[in-house]
Amino acid sequence: MKVIHTDNAPQAIGPYSQAIVTGNLAFCSGQIAIDPATGQVISGGIVEQTELVCKNIGELLNAANSSYAKVVKTSCFLADMGDFATFNEVYAKYFVSKPARSCVAVKTLPKNVLCEIEVIAEI
Image (cartoon, rainbow, N blue to C red; front, side, top):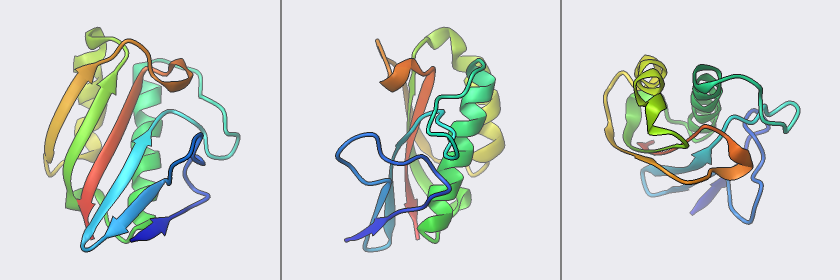
């Protein structure tokens, strides 16, 4: 296993790695709307938060020598399923290859953000 680390994505806020590569797969930890430069959750609604989450995932994929086109599975977590349609509009701009996905609403996300996405991608 190889631990992936980049300063271009938020640092882990717990005892985990940003991503792990094993074999020909990258497993990216769930990303939330934290600005990597400040370490703070950004202001804004579901659109702004989803955009930053997707950009952070892109940085992890890049650090793991992968890309959005190689994502095979995403797991998406929303604080409010009422945001589902708007979340999908932003998500669709990044995950154009339409990987397999699950999307659920949860009671609370870390730092009270509105969404979180984790991915598995080919290298």
